[in-house]
Amino acid sequence: METIMSLFRLLPFKFVFVSVFLSLLHAVLCKVCRAPKLSGHGPPSYPVIGCLISFYKSRTRLLEWYTELLAASATNTIVVNRLGARRTIVTANSENVEYMLKTNFNNFPKGKPFTEILGDFLGYGIFNVDGELWRMQRKLASHAFSTNSLREVVMSTLEEEVENQLLPLLESLAETSRVVDLQDLLRRLAFNMVCKVSLGVDRCCLDPSLPVSPLSKAFDMASEICARRGAAPLFLVWKVKKWLGVGSEKRLKDAVEEVHAYVEEIIRDKKKKIDEGEENCGEDLLSRLILAGHDEELIRDMAISFIMAGRDTTSAAMTWLFWLLSCHPVIEQELLKEIENMEERLLDYESLKDLKLLKASLCESMRLYPPVAWDSKHAMADDMLPDGTLVQAGDRVTYFPYGMGRMEALWGKDWSEFRPSRWFIEPSYHGGSLKKVSPYKFPVFQAGPRVCLGKEMAFIQMKYVVASILGRFEIRPVGSDKPVFVPLLTAHMAGGLKVVIQKRDHSR
Image (cartoon, rainbow, N blue to C red; front, side, top):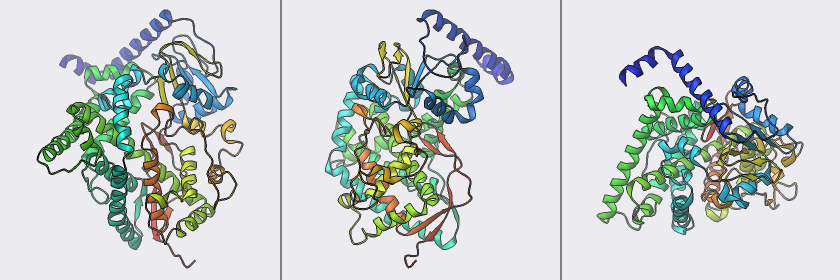
C-alpha cells in the first residue's frame, strides 16, 4: 500500500490517467447495460464523454450555465449526461418540484448515490437517510420543534447572544471604524446559537479577534469537500483518492474524525450530567435525544445534522440581505420605519411576527441567493414528471432553487430585481398582508414531507438579529464589487462581506 501511495504522489499524471480510464470504463459499461438514452433538452452530449466539454468550458460559472439552459428550455427542465455518472435531470419547474417532493414522494428518496457522498460526514443523520430511519428521526425532531419549551430556549438564547454579546461588539467596532467581515460575524453568531439550542453548550466564539472554533473549522472543511464530491465532473476520482487515503479525502477523514470527537465528548458529558441529575428536563435537542434512549452513534449523527441545518443557512440569508439593502437604500429606510414602529414593544415571539416587510425582504434575499442552491433525489422506479420528462430508475433528479429564483415563468420579467413588495398581496410595504407563495415555487426550505422543521424558528432568529442590528447601526460594505455566490452544501459569499459599522443617526 505504501508503494502504491508513493507512486501516486510522485506521478500525478498517472493518477489522473488511471482515474479517467476507470471513469470511461464505468460510463461505457453503464451505457451498454442501460436502456437507450431518452431525449431531453440539455447541453450538447456525446457518446461516452457526455456533456464533459460544455461542463468544463462552463466550470467557473456553473450556476449561470445551468440557469441559462433551464431558461432556454420550454419546460424549464434539462437532461444532463455526465461522464462517469448516472443521467441527471435538472428542473426549475414548480410542478415537477411538487411531484418529486410531495405527489410521488416515495419514488424520489435521497438514494444511495447521495448518501454515499455525505455518508462519511453526516452518517445516519436525518438529512442523509430514507425510509424508516428517516421517519423515526423526523417524528422525534417534529415533537421537539413543536414544543413551547424549545421556543422559549430559542428566544432566551437569542436575547442573551444578541443583547449581551453581539450588540456590545458592534458598538466597539463602530467606535473604531474598523473593517470587519460581517459574514464571519453572523456565522459565528449562528454557530453559537445552534450549539446552545442543539447541544446545550456555549462555544463563545463571537468576537472576530478570537480564533474560529476548531469544531467550526472542521465542519467547514468536511462540508466543502463533501460538496466538491457531488460536483466533481469525474465521480470516480474522489473514490480512488478515498481508497488511497490521499489529498482532499485524507483531509475529509481528519476533519470528520475531529467533528465526531468533539460531538461525542459533548454527548458523554451531557449523559453524565443527566445521570447525576444536573440537567433538568433537558431543554436542548441533544438532551431530548439522550433521554429518548437512542444509541450514541445515532445521537451523534443527528446532532451533526442539526448543526448543519442551523449554522450556515440563516447566516447566509442575513449576509446577502445586508448587502442587498446597502444597494437599495429606499427599501432599507422602509424597513427601518417598520422596525422603529416596534420600539415600544419587546422583540418577542409574537411581536416578531408583525415584521412583515422584514420577512418579505428575507424571502426576496433567499429567492435570489438561496442558502441551498440545489438538492437531488434518485428515482426508485421509472416515472414521468408532469412536464412530460421521462425518468428512468436510478436517474438523479435535481431541483434547483437558485435557477428557480431566476425563471421569468415563475417571477415575471423583473425577476432580477430585489423587490420585497412582490411578497405582498397589495403593492404596499406597510399594513398589507403577505402572499401565500407555494413552497414548490420557492423551495428554499424544501417542501412536502421533508419540509424544514426549523423554518419558523429560522425566520424568528433572522428577524431578531436583523432588526436588532438595523435599528441601531448602519452597515456599509467596503468596495463596490458584486459579491460572488459560492454554492457548497450551504452557500456563502466568496471572501466574506467586508463592512464598516456606524451608529445610526436617528435625527436625520
